[in-house]
Image (cartoon, rainbow, N blue to C red; front, side):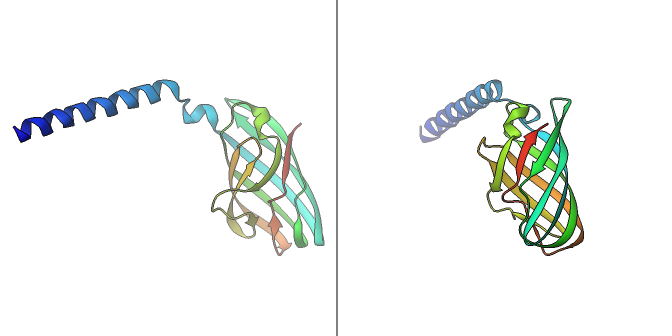
Length: 150
């Protein structure tokens, strides 16, 4: 008797989990629809307060969108360039990438040498970037980076 009740409860639980998985799979957008790839080239020069900017490209839904980058460089010392590549997630449209980015989650917000940065803007877009810095500079602070569509 006890085994029959347990068996029936397990079958019911499996049915509920399967139905939930089907419902979530049918309504949730795929990762490919909400994630794009990003490539950025940033140049920064300064002493204490840096002046920097750059350009890049967002590839989203098989189309390329040119980007302008500005506002990089708090706490800089020296001259450096960095090429970054990675992903932009939580995109509903290409315009969502526009805005100011700050630190997100546990990722570092500084790139120096070979590092990873995780940044988020007000639209909820999360950039996960990886790159190598060339030149001499203590750090490139990406926390105040602003990206605009060109």
